[in-house]
Image 1 (cartoon, rainbow, N blue to C red):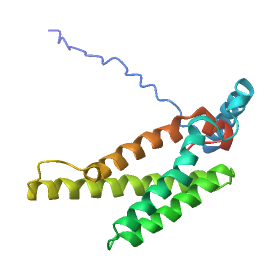
Image 2 (cartoon, rainbow, N blue to C red):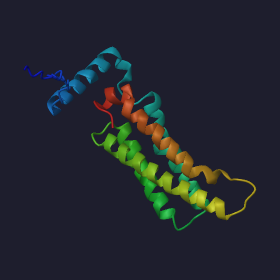
Image 3 (spheres, rainbow, N blue to C red):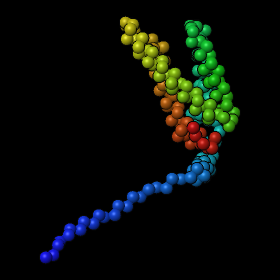
Image 4 (tube, one colour):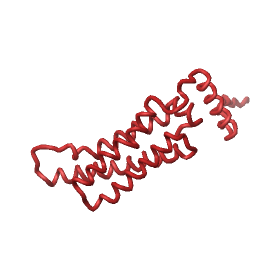
Length: 171
């Protein structure tokens, strides 16, 4: 009597994993990419284009608007607003002068604006639900505008060839 054994053979599973690049390899890859951008687009090195616009807005336009707003309508938050204005000017000047800490300051500024925008937006939504006003003023959208602009600028500083060519890295 023969015993029939069913032999089920599982096919070997081949899992292909991509090797995790070492930090040195990542730095070398980034350095090669920076050199490629600098070689192919030398006009992108330096403060110009959207980077120049960010510097102008951060160093001049936004501080003037904020100080005018603070002076015309002082509040308990004026100290926070003035601190933000000072930080914006410091960040803009560091970007303009191409200092080593410019991108770190920019990253912090955009994070502050993002979280401050969220808080303002939530406060504005909560206060609009408790107040019955027929019209909305431009200040009702300040939190939303701050939130959206910080996101847009974050992606600019993350993906910009000009930022990478000028500073050797992005945020």
